[in-house]
Image 1 (cartoon, rainbow, N blue to C red):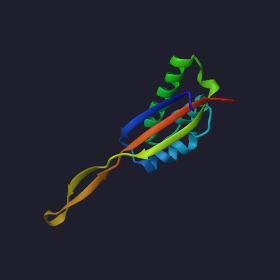
Image 2 (cartoon, one colour):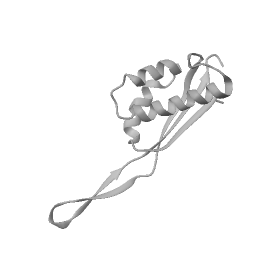
Image 3 (cartoon, rainbow, N blue to C red):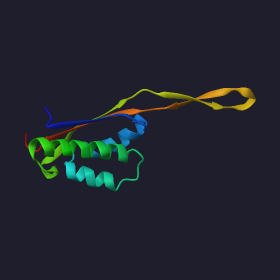
Length: 113
């Protein structure tokens, strides 16, 4: 069981792009994962960083543990609902544009537990 869990639902980033970022921080220390996300040049980093900061704040408020004692024990990106929009095409047609969303789940645990 994890010490703290943070969820971000309906994030406007595709799950495929978000998984590229999440795979970099899986299993890392919380402060190292935060530093890595701050220096990353991917569009999904803001969503993941926001969720990680929320999870760290949850642990600080409940257990009074700093981020140096924590590691990312579980990270999951789930597919959210797809928003369907239409775009004009030639000869009066319309084509579908799918705007995909993601659900982000981050769990932190204490090292050595």
